[in-house]
Amino acid sequence: MVYIILAAIFYTGAIMFGAAASRAINSNLVAAIVNTISAVIPIAIILPILDKKIVENGKFGIIMAILGGISVALFVMTINKSFQVNKVAMVSPIVFGGGNFPIRNS
Image (cartoon, rainbow, N blue to C red; front, side):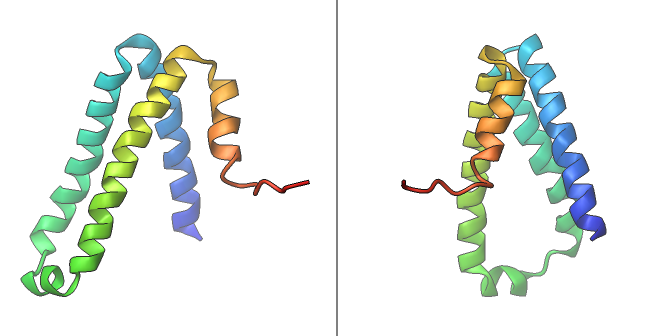
């Protein structure tokens, strides 16, 4: 439960800081900085404990993680551009609310 609460707090911070940054500088620069920082911190934590056996046995997971990383990078670029050109109060419910409520056909 602690990790769920921490994830929600960090996620909220990421959205607030990303929106503020995107209004102050180029949104693609914001995306590059955010993605770089968000890659460096986990790498710095995992490299000291990385084992060759983990890499060999987890090829599918590594491929999926790479695809996930590409998706996150593209998401950060598009959401920061959205924050730059639209109001945060409009972007957030559309982007994040849409994932929580399935669309029903009437």
